[in-house]
Image (tube, rainbow over all chains, first blue to last red; front, side, top):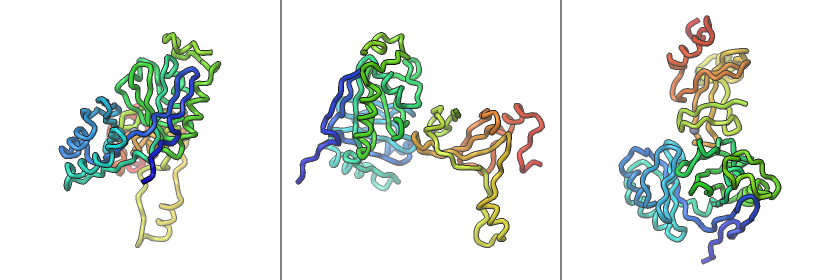
Length: 198
Length: 109
Ligand SMILES: [Zn+2]
């Protein structure tokens, strides 16, 4: 049995913000009618989190439940438990028309934290990331430069990001460039941390 | 820069988050149709200066298709609406008529 490793083995960078690859992360894609009782039960039991509204994510300890589309949820769980969690979900789903797949090894996860975290992400995503428009609890699928990504805020100064594993290095390089010391724009200048760092 | 409201997830999506799907509300002419109808279905597209109906996919977002009614000259967006319809809903036609007096949907003319 080979030893699983994450795409960038926890690489990190310090600049305007702290950028780190989060290591192995359990991720399960669940597709189906989100109104179906079995789908809701499978998702909430697997993640330990309550069902999120559209464009939101609910975190609970090591688990999380993210709204991906009108018929898709992303379940976050500890990496070693992903396979057995999928099995449990499939039993819960039974004959309900739905699909649960362990995508942990197909994805990479990053965290960007610090006072300038908003600005670092705002350089890369076509999303209004001002504090009034985007805050903890919200979840957004978008793009980072040329790649698809999903972003959410863990707290007021920290973003979680997931992207495909095959583009993990591109994503890390992007985040490092956007967090390059000396490149502060100060667009969210109301936040003192966002204009320091050069 | 075009920003379209995705009716599936509710996000105001930047054009760069979207994939264009071409002219909307085409009638398909398949097996059994005349060569001319099939040719037009495959190749003939409107290219209006003004009101136009398009299909778009929220490719980097929720992944779903939707329709948009907009003006190709001014980039004004009149409405976005469900992909699951063969012609624009009345509310969309009303929204366009309010901004472009005298304009009519092709099936009404
Ligand atoms: Zn959408």
